[in-house]
Amino acid sequence: MDFKQIISHCKEYGFVYQSSEIYDGLSAVYDYGPNGVNLKNNLKQYWWRSMVQMHDNIVGLDSAIFMHPKIWKASGHVDAFNDPLVDNKDSKKRYRADQLIEGYTDKIEAKIKKDVEKARKKFDDFDEKMFRETNGRIVERQKKIDDVLGRMNSMLAAEDMEGLKNLIEELEIACPESGSRNWTDVRQFNLMFNTQLGNIAGEDGKLYLRPETAQGIFVNFLNVSKTSRQKVPFGIAQIGKAFRNEIVARQFIFRMREFEQMEMQFFVRPGTEMEWYEAWREKRMKWHEAIGSPAEKLRFHNHENLAHYANAASDIEFEFPFGFKELEGIHSRTDFDLGAHQELSGKKLQYFDPELDKNYVPYVVETSIGADRMFLAQVSHCLREEEVPDADGKATNRTVMKFHPAIAPIKCAVLPLLKNNESLVKASKDICDKLRLAVDIQYDEKDAIGRRYRRQDAIGTPFCVTVDHQSLEDNTVTLRDRDSLEQTRISIDEINSQVLAKTSMEDLLLSTK
Ligand code: GAP
Image 1: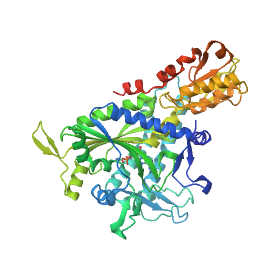
Image 2: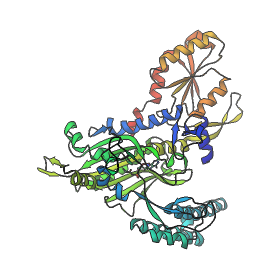
Image 3: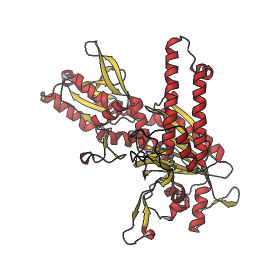
Image 4: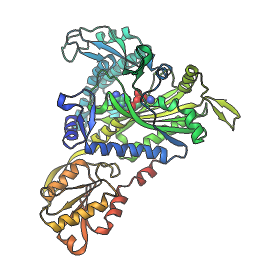
């Protein structure tokens, strides 16, 4: 499905709405509807349980969004959490310089893809890797992409704003709105939102909305390690809102101004961080594959230009409808954050290691994923159009969301065959009363049964229970499977246990171990 269809499906079926829509919307801010909130909660549960419930040495935290402003000074966000911006003087539109340049290389990449697809159609035993490595035109284009991105990354790392402006001019990049190349200089723009404490005027009362949840974990390191009696290596996990004043906010919920992060900081003995970094990379990839994201849609991207606090960093990228993009970051952050807070707060943030008989500031390996990006990855991968046989065996199209049953927003729908048959309705409602104690359900009596199945397919409900005349005679119902379309007759007494077993997170959690 293309990206536009995904966005409109999300709206039509109550997954995601534009925020403040009746006031023409607020850009890059979104609300989750009834199915969306269930799906997002289930994804958060999956993350939380695989971290906190499945590890003796990972504990949870829920720190406040507002924190002492010095925290953001120590973390480097006040001075360095910037995006390079450039304005087009004719359209007055503002862009991120790096995204303009990436837009340029994306176009070259699109041309490469076109050539690859053409060749694929031509040759039976097509070898894409070999074609990309040997076709002269593609090799040239790839060289251009690598050169431009390489230069851009060096300039970003060196904060060379003049270099970025020159690169935009050299590549003759035009404003997508006005078509002109009339650019201002490139400037740094801080991404943190700020607000004011009620009783203090001026700079002293300035508060920031946290741009990441991680700092709440760092500043609670002592509290948590003391009160949980955890020994290094151990982790602290947190899910919570983060805020960034993204300038170019596009691609739906991929880049939002208010979003949710699921972050885990793993505190380790200095010198062991690379082993843990590798271990967490592997574990996190497994977590993505277990939920059904196919291996070919996932890849690691190793950072070449490391942030000043990191000694290794990589992203897990997912193939979104607009290409491979960052879904999760895994960073070896050394002792930078704890060290910086120790220095600015004057409080020792150290751990006494009984085995080594000494104190040290632990090193940290972080895993950080956006809940909203994970949501988008799942929705874009699971939403499909497919041909299936209808009741008479004729081919028909259906729209279906093939979520893993454990994360589907509704686990089972209960459908009386006829809505104006009191006995069928009553039997169905009795089933609902019991089944809702176990899982999220939906009761639906409107329209023909086929249309009701399609409605459930469109929101990814893995099972439908249909109550028919036979149910009244022998206490059985049909249980329809979303994927195989098989309908099996089961006893009403077995519904809860069967649906629970088929939709539980247990197997999923086991496969992430
Ligand atoms: N504590 C590390 C950190 O915040 P990051 O790479 O800036 O690292 C981590 O963010 C993850 O948060 C990203 O991989 C992405 O999934 C998510 N994320 C970041 N900015 C986002 C935004 N504007 N909208 C939605 N998700 C975002």
